[in-house]
Picture (cartoon, rainbow, N blue to C red):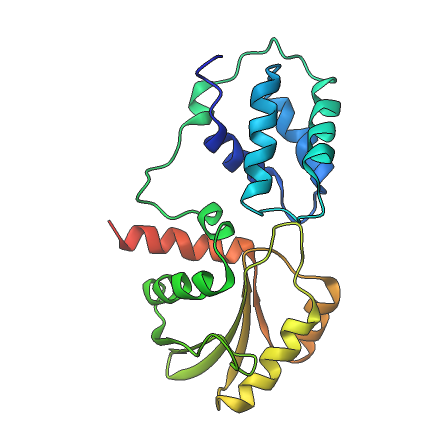
Length: 220
């Protein structure tokens, strides 16, 4: 087996292609143009690794993902060499959005405490693991108390307007002047519309990536 094929960095670059405008099939289509490989063992290992971390929905079977991958590989030139520098991993000490993708909901809240503190928020507190009344974290910024609803979702699962409704209720419960929903994924159109109407701020995957960048800088 060729040592250049490394599953971990391939996973990271794969999810770079999986943004709000791409389906899973389209992400694979773009991905294999840069990372074509003919070794079936690596294909199966890649599929197993993606699904085991639950980054995508559980109803996407390994067989389906494997079939999609092979379907796209049939249309690319596997003789094209892969550039080694594309497979370089970031320093282990740095947090990435892909690390966030691997967390459960409670761990997501805990890491948000550190990320928010590094981004200028103070008095950051996790409200509790149950009975939070729609508010997962309470923070202060510019003398303003803010309640935050945190949603750690699979990247192909968008946050619906239910999360916006939850944080709307939490504003009154926590006597906050502002409500925010934060996710490592993206939002449905109805969630965006409801948030806009009620002045609820939505932080999506791109926003979190920006916060992570500042967090990493603060750790150096």
